Image (cartoon, rainbow over all chains, first blue to last red; front, side, top):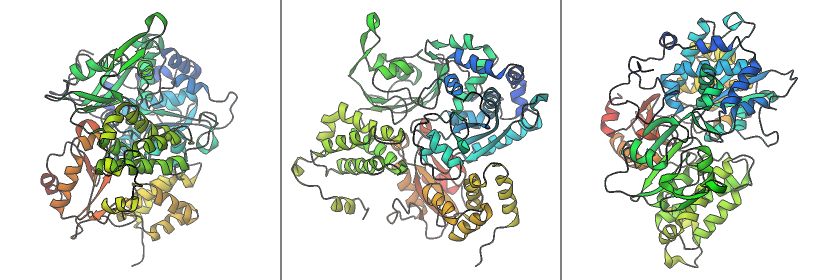
Length: 465
Length: 164
């Protein structure tokens, strides 16, 4: 890989290990199938097609690949939930609805290296026995949808898709399906409803996994773009080798997307757990902005609970147990979970001391109020209430008791909805209040203590009436 | 004016429908996209046309049209701008970008709300709305103008000058 050169000014950081993003910003690279094949593309597919499908799943399990969309669920295990002795068709859906605020990795795979995704998808389809697959891509990637459709046509012309793939008895069609701007379509059962042509209301669980009952009530596998790309790399080097990358139970590489108050925001592919928060912010991202201090980090997309600079976290068990500060958090699934947050989608939002916490929380709450699908009452009403209260905070007309009300609303959404959107919308508010209550209270108006806040006047002032 | 879908658009629609061999209803969004791309928005007539095309009750189309933020029910300007409103872009100045774009294009957003998010310039050339996270948080502020993506937008006037 030493012959890989990158566009000047866009070279990877020395701490990176590029697998998925090997071709992103690569000099002389384009999206064509010729370029991809010249670089060894589709060779892994040829190898995979000679394997027994079950062995591919075994390799993925051996690699320990965990889903890169947000939940971090083991991919091979997910595939293993397909019912045995199934007689119905199996579908595979690539979740390219990338829309968790702070996350911008799939964009670059789709726009710069579409064949990597297509190859990973074909291998995965072969492994799970899917003959029809869809790429559910967010509507706001119009160019990405065109690029993928062109790539699919190229792959079909080479018989990587279509009837009798590479002379085998395996048939496969992949189609691109565009969403229409709704965050909830990233929830896999909401996505399936959307693909069926309905409103994307997430389905009631159980069944917990669409592998049991998904698209058209048939067994369905839904995987994230980055996850499906990893499948190709696992087969290329073998599950055992792949599992040596990263740390146990947090294997492989993963793309961290850093945005907010750092010198060099951007995408960085690293071995999972090879970096601490401090190394990520100070080395890789060039540190905070001049003269600024760290206030908070949202480590895994805006739904992830916020981490406060200055708080301490207990990690490890038994003899390994220790207390660490925010700078020493290892950026992997298990450590971030131990710190009370999550690695989520890999979107790291850095917030410095120039930012008002009320303003940040209000921006996040406005997102969830806009994106709630409206199916469950606690979330539909609560997400809007949370936005209204933080509107008051930002506008200087919140009563001191509003913070407790806000917390109460969040706690009454959390755990009371059909899908995880409830938690996603409640966790920011819960964690911001738990960690920044003083600052939020300081933004309330003490003169309004004990007064019933007049929402109508508020709405009028905000131009909403 | 009667509602007519040109033959070349209908050909594309028919092509899209073949992608869903199990259920025609699945083609609702793709067909909406084809019509919205041509007409700029989805009118009542378009809803009826899609319903007939896909052999659905019109409400099955309307419920989809009214749900998704990406589907417009009124005519946008010739160039429709969507500015990312969400956190990382807001930190990079998307609210200021929105104000500057509105001022430059002479757009008044005061009449907009959750259900009517789009404001159009008096000459009909530009329309604008906020969008939620466009997934390019490292290069904010970002926006879409029709299907063109713009990142780290430095200046409203410079951006709008590209569209005539």
